[in-house]
Length: 323
Ligand code: SF4
Ligand code: MG
Image 1 (cartoon, rainbow, N blue to C red):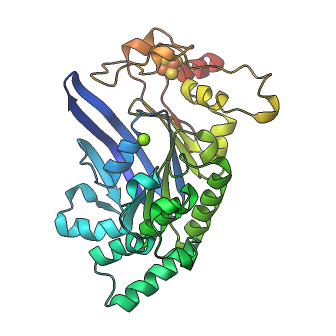
Image 2 (image 1 turned 90 degrees about the vertical axis):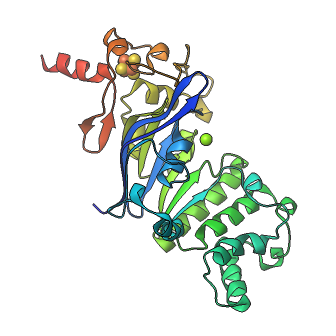
Image 3 (image 1 turned 180 degrees about the vertical axis):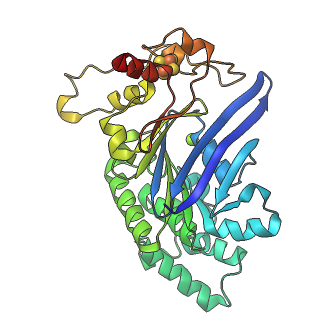
């Protein structure tokens, strides 16, 4: 398979007054060109930090980031300028990420100006008009300001801006989480169309599994800085194996049976990501925990092709079945 991105043992630690915060702690995954990896987990699990470290908006503490076969952690300033064109980000809150004093067309033009992509004003205007059309923004909005638009249109501006430099890879950090459900579907459909049209690869970060269900090719589940399960999307929904993934899945409301369904709620204290120590980080909330869970950290293993998990229990069950 043609892997556009390979991340190996990626770590990002932050010094805090309380100690070393293990925001991302040895994460390994890859993404195939033109596909979408959904990265799912609760807030504070390190998914946004992973996205920013992959883009080198934050410097990694350790690990490798291989983009198109090259370790981009070695890149100097000049190489990073070029890389910025190939890797982009779409933020959660388009309003917060847009300059309120700039018009829509100025916002979309900015990356083209910074990266000197246009020879003259006419070319710039033409490119901006084309980008607006591509994301479904009417031409008459050219001279309006972000606050005059609704959330869906504002996110379209964010997408147009991200597309301006013809990127290959886009980190989408909760791009629809701030939007109404009806608008979410429109924006997701647009993103899907753009992926096909431009061959984009997405790393799609969300706390909401139902958003990535139909959108992702693969899904990675993170818990407190670690990747605990990764599988093709369908497989993850059909055969989740990690207790945390199961809990996340059971928390998705299914409208028709909402009231009958007994939800496995996540209870218990959350392990601190500051100096987390040894053992499974989910153990204090895990209803399946065994003594071993506190004594050693489970490593990622493959249970079926492309389906990885990190949990002590599963290997145990398998062994029992074999015996
Ligand atoms: Fe639960 Fe233990 Fe598996 Fe962690 S390793 S998820 S505590 S069973
Ligand atoms: Mg976040």
